[in-house]
Length: 112
Image (cartoon, rainbow, N blue to C red; front, side, top):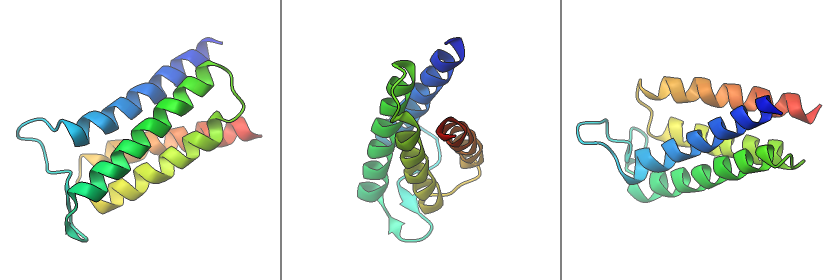
């Protein structure tokens, strides 16, 4: 039970970070709204970050509430987050990539 709560809160926090990083960037932080692939990507990046944030929050809430659908939502959130990372990649997003890998591993383990 404690593991479920801790991981669920971590998923909620990961969603909050997605929301915060794209909607309220800190002054001096790297520009997460500009893509190395397509140039200016504010609409696309903020939209993807918002959907990913909602999906991570839903997965975290679902895990805490012991709902059977949370792993699928967590995997979808991870996929959206990885598309976003590829779109606006910078070296600081390597940590996000590692966190996404952990989320995917935990969700896939729960599907067994």
